Length: 403
Image (tube, rainbow, N blue to C red; front, side, top):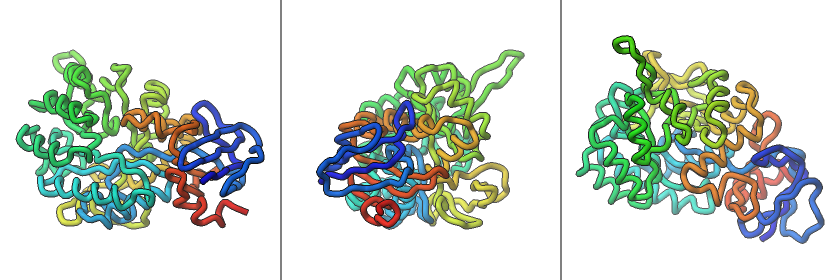
């Protein structure tokens, strides 16, 4: 099956230019500049001068469309994933929040069911992101501290055995006793360890980095920063992320968690190769509601939705993002003054590299998977393709894109 997509503005890693792509059996077989040549193809799609970019890669989301990945049902997984798909996300790491052992095991079961059910029908599910339970209660944020605990080898070995092949990433507070050994076990299992909900100081972060903890979960949110003791200043996780050049970070670029000037600063200081955009969305992403629940329906926390963000009911802190990934691109380009191709890079190639998928996904490059998103000047998504299959706008509903 060969599909030609033309009359489009290609979002390439280093620029935006007019061009075309050819998809053959789910793979990008040609990426060209200028007008499309005359070729034999099964489908020819005129994209009407919209942008064509690689599909968004989301490292950290709790849900969308009214569903949370902790709800414990296949329907919840499908609802959340398909809502994100409508907004251009073609690769997802569903996030399991700190919870009871039973709920965590259930989320692993549901992930496996969803990975099979959505194969060829939804976004690619690379693996689960486990956010806890081995975090610091002092940096719990919106996570229920009742479910936060120290790394227990007996428990996490059970999780690792049960979730083998289903877990891609795990957030841990690296100052917790036994955290470095836990990180080593994650690496042995092929799981990316990352720092989050942590009160660590620079020496602890540097030590964790040397043990393979190379990524930081939602920079600025739920982490230590510089403190002064006896006149001397001590760096926290935040400063450590800037001080360690090869450490990658993710930022919640919804325009609420971080103001535009900080988004721009992180982009300039760390560079596009070390910054991934994330929505860290909760269940009400993609909905118009006033209240919602963070976590599972049975044990989650009620939250308030106002000012385009979720807050704890007492308004003391944010409870999560309500953004989808198209909004992140919109904020980075229109508020934080980041060029479109670089904003897209931080939503595609960089997160793909972080989780080891950079050779298959993340850019409009010949030989990579045909995961594509089409959007207009307002970053409104008009079509999505996963593995060459038109799932939103492309082929399946051609009225949006084809004469």
